[in-house]
Length: 164
Image 1 (cartoon, rainbow, N blue to C red):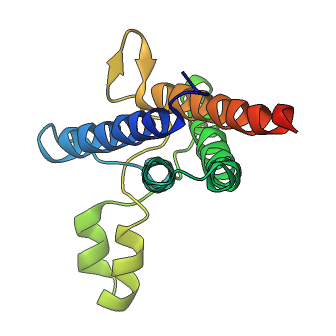
Image 2: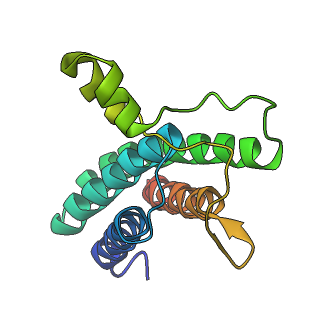
């Protein structure tokens, strides 16, 4: 499949990432789960992977696929690192939660030019587990998707390397 249709694989990866982002927004806006700063960073990494994979699916060039797979590897590796760190915090929570502030408290207590950057930092507790599926938290599932993306990128890089 990877040799015959790499564009389909990249397109499928992009759709998976966009679906995960949409589900995260659903949990935030419909279910009231506030993302923590690490969740926000994972969203940016997931969005980066989705964009890179989407762009790679539009290209027919194997050279573009090779270079893009390397960039994909970096973005997914960064996301996996952040998700692994958050999973660690969830399994071994610190005694004092120091991860984010209340949204309305930021608006009321800080000037707007200082409050706006703080909003993008998230407001939930990074060690809290607010949602699970099959025993895994959001961070655990994000780690699995990022890790699978890293493996996919390594396979794509390896297949190009083997052809030489």
